[in-house]
Length: 553
Image 1 (cartoon, rainbow, N blue to C red):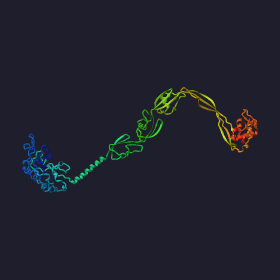
Image 2 (cartoon, rainbow, N blue to C red):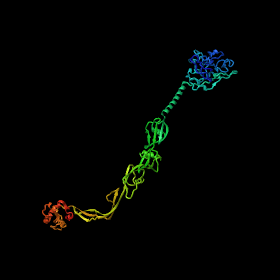
Image 3 (tube, one colour):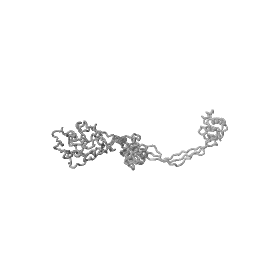
Image 4 (cartoon, rainbow, N blue to C red):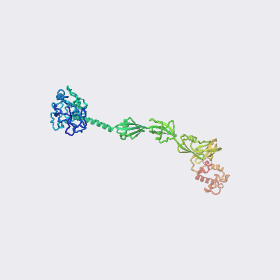
């Protein structure tokens, strides 16, 4: 096979595939392109139309293949009359195993002056089992040219990559110097063609691979994961935020914050933020608190809890001290604004002190003698608090005062109800009391007891109270004993004040209320006793508070 199929009279020529590059203006057929199976002769007419590739070129273009400029490599001096003679090349050299005896016998050589029309080109038959693919189309030899199967569809690699097979050298034959010399005479080794079934399998495999890559790319997501402020990028096929974290060995608990929440559908190019919970025991201005925070430092944790750290005083830590996932314990005193009212003026102070006494010292307020503050000196100042300082002057006074005795009553079942008998008389005690006579901020105050010392203890009085039921017969009471106690048994008795009269020491008003007339001391003893019984029935023995119990003796 020494040439390529002619494109003359078919609308233009394609590029020549081979070792040499012809000028871009060339549109004619390859020179001396005989039918594949023809026997070449020295007669140029056997090769079809005369070679005139530059017939339409301008006058300033030199035909490099003109006789003057280019020696014909096929001249009889260089080649035998049969350049592909039996010694060098013979169709039979491929044997029945390779080609049929007449592979192109069916070509009618019609229409195409070179006999290579696509519709008439017969598919070569390969005897070897490797070339018996019946799907090989006849037209695949359309692009067969002097360099092999470079343009033939169905060949997966340009045949130009396969070293061409050269015919044996002819003795006495000189090497052509034409750009299309021996390279144009080389015959490439046949390559195994791939049939429709093989191409289908290859297509399916390729489509599967491309589909797999497409699926891989479609389902893989690039996600930025921020864990306690440390950001890294992961690639995940997970469908949710929680699954993506699990695939990256990130575990979270009930005190951890995950944003978005773990049930959220995972999106490509999204960001997952994880903040681990940290238990802290903090004391702010003396008040202890246990809490969970998600900040990695002391300062950030306090801000998370709403504690103002600007100007704060940290105890044994600072704002940048890290907090591990196991937690931490620390104390802090925040900056507080305090107002002091002292000596008739106000004094403002911003302080982180732990006690009022320290704040007073920082404010330059001195305390003297009895001076004191409106809050305890060891109290912790609070933000916005107003503290009054009291300037106190004055003296003390000592007095003795009585201590009243107490009365103890005991039940006496032998005495009638309403009767009381004093068993032990009570006596008052004596105490020595010290009073402060103070002037606070210029105002005199009432005496204030500041100390007490007992000099004599009081003696409690003990009384026995009758618990015996009263008799129902009034006349059976011991009226003689009552008269003896009240008047000494004298019906005409009058007390020294002239208020009470007779046996039972009636007052004039009481005597009149009972129906008596005149003075009780002027009535008979029987009338006095009768009216006494009426008084008892009306008011009981209580009318004789001292001697009434004698009625029941």
